[in-house]
Image (tube, rainbow, N blue to C red; front, side, top):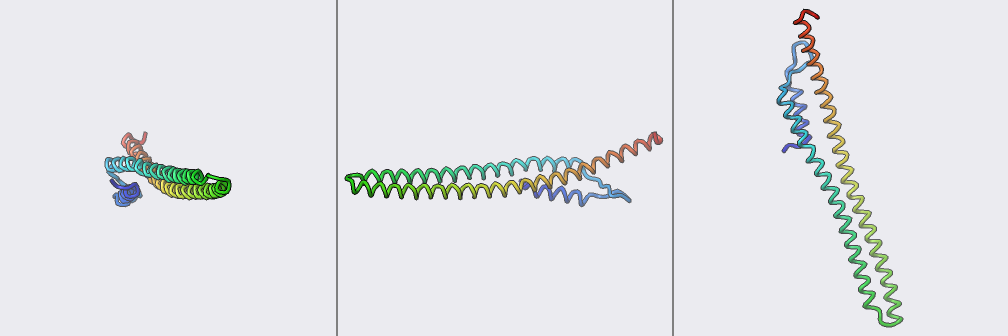
Length: 167
């Protein structure tokens, strides 16, 4: 399947290569081919949107993995702490070490969460910019097509008026 950009390039090529009417900037385009190309563009858009959703889902997976790893580190620290509890001196050392490990685990989890969110945000920003560019290009081409069709309608209307004797 062609990408949206390939299809837009094909539309531009169709417009550029269309024969012009004598002494005018008006062009003639195969209507069925134009509608088929517009249909292909519409079919291609959901693929880009699905890619954006996969990126968002991947972000959630990264965050969940970071949370799971943090929970695993915390659980390991708690288990180690329980093993160290036997008398006052060992208990005191165990509590200090557990607090240190828990703090490190929380810091690591926080850093991983921040990195995952930044990574996902960057991917989503790139996708957003790409989709905005696609939309702008599509709207630009649509406006050109709309202008072309409106001009063609005017020509047909004027021709009909001339046939009727200028009524």
